[in-house]
Length: 325
Ligand SMILES: [Zn+2]
Image 1 (cartoon, protein in one colour):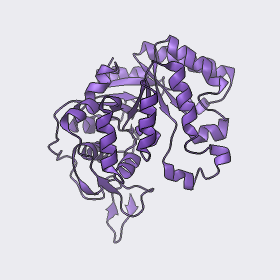
Image 2 (spheres, helix red, strand yellow):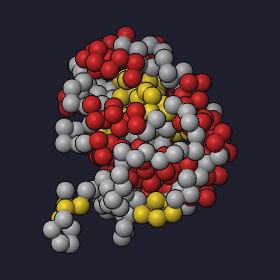
Image 3 (cartoon, helix red, strand yellow):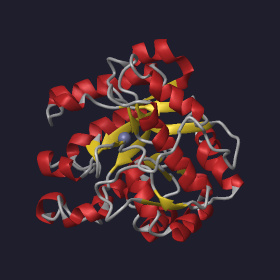
Image 4 (cartoon, helix red, strand yellow):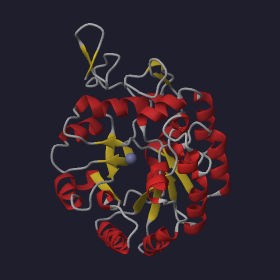
């Protein structure tokens, strides 16, 4: 909560006074498959699953510790599937960490995971010198391929961060440079699928996304990272609409909801409300979610996709690509 003018606190998930329990009538009635969440614990996440269900989400894929995965499966059953991630807190470019990562990949696979996630945003390059074409990654990639995995990657970050936290491109690389490692992975694992998280990390540049789609038939993207995606899509909703319709088989629904003990129903509902309002309506007004990167009040300008495209993005693509295993 942050103080508003006057004494009334502002809910950062509800700047415009919505009642998230009154779920809108949506354009399509299809059960959604959310390919990108972080349900970090089995307990204390009832509000997340309640909000997901209220907004039509049938199943989520989650990234969390391997140690929590069996409990999540026991408590939530088929409502949650897993994306294999390493033990980030112990991350180091050592043989021991590499061995642990490969062992965890096998264990996640036994729990039904079909995707593994590589997080190689600019801080990874700065702190560890790591990119996907670094020799450290090759045994990990080879092992993941042997186990039958497809891939999710985070390479980009909001373009405007290159004006601030990534301004030193000698340390972080340019934004465009982040994509060399992505293209390395796309070629290395082809025809295995690669999902570019957060609209491929570059919803600001739909031309680059189209180039990547055209060059790499195994490349798809997810819609996750609600604040970033809402902010930047709203700057050019018509261009994004063209991109998604033209590549309707290659966009997957994701929220990037991260569970935290302090988050309530409204927090999670706000992400699903904003995502659905963005993709399936012509809403042209304020976004309900506080956004520290927005200039002035955060805006949400809807893309208003046709129903057949929405059905693909929300569910059909994930099923066709085998992610609902
Ligand atoms: Zn995420």
